[in-house]
Image (cartoon, rainbow, N blue to C red; front, top):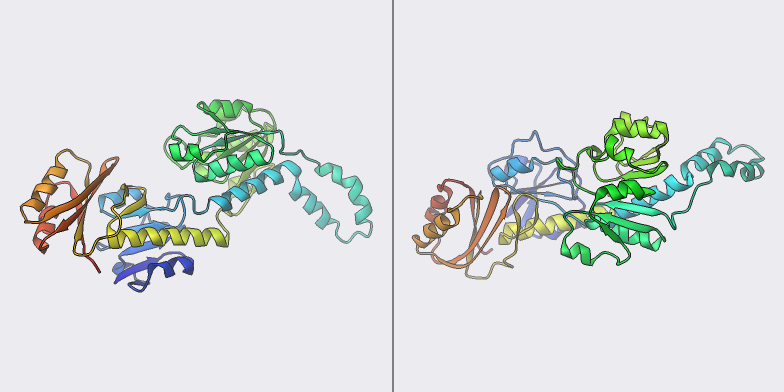
Length: 390
């Protein structure tokens, strides 16, 4: 029986996927795994028995990923599960920024008791006139699941889409509409696009990427959308660009006193993935990842240890998962330790991810606690887990 601690409201359609050999617990100390959405784990001390953390969403800024790696705790995320929800909100933002829908609605509400409202509307509506998206140039920074969906949809709106992603995968490239122009210099997007939308993770390279220098290159009247991470935009530089009119509208999904007080900013209360469908998709994907790891040792969308898939655990065999530093000679020590224990290695996979490495070994033979303890004693090994058939 595995125990799961949910630190946020996780859709029941997801937790139900875990099956009868799982139980939910309110006590973190007895949990094998955590499922969460936005709860902050940076100040949380994890129990020694904790094996995994599954984030029902793509971003993992709320999880101490490096510390988890050092403790042999796998961190999963669910990229793409909420992509459609965010994509739809991006286009909602594009339309609101282009047509002054919010201003028009506020005017109607302010004059709702005027018996001449219908007549006055014809004169007032020119104050809220905007422009169409068709024929405009959209720059998409980041072509992961969300960015690619945005770029593809833009072409169906009649927009010219430019995409920038220095880490564009082959699979992602195959999924892009052939009309999307892939650029290798983000400055081309800054210089030429009427609309710019950001869809990248928060890293040392991307923090503050939309700052004074980037803004200075942009076309006057540009519209910028940030539904990815708050730290991607230098808020002081953005406020100044909005005051100056260089940026016509800033659509942001991260409210704080700075963004809420920006002139011509449309600030949403973090609604990007707030649909029932997205929450269900993320919960199902997170539960599936946890179940496959706990029962089979496989890693799918692990942000700190990479991906390994050896399929379901066959009957009559066991697997040993070893979390260790990505250091020379460790694989040999692991193999020789198992060989000296009269265990036959039937299958073996290794994946390194930065300074971290994960080795999954399928064995037959009489497995006792001794070889597990011997593996755990090897310098550089962080955690060893024996996975036996249910």
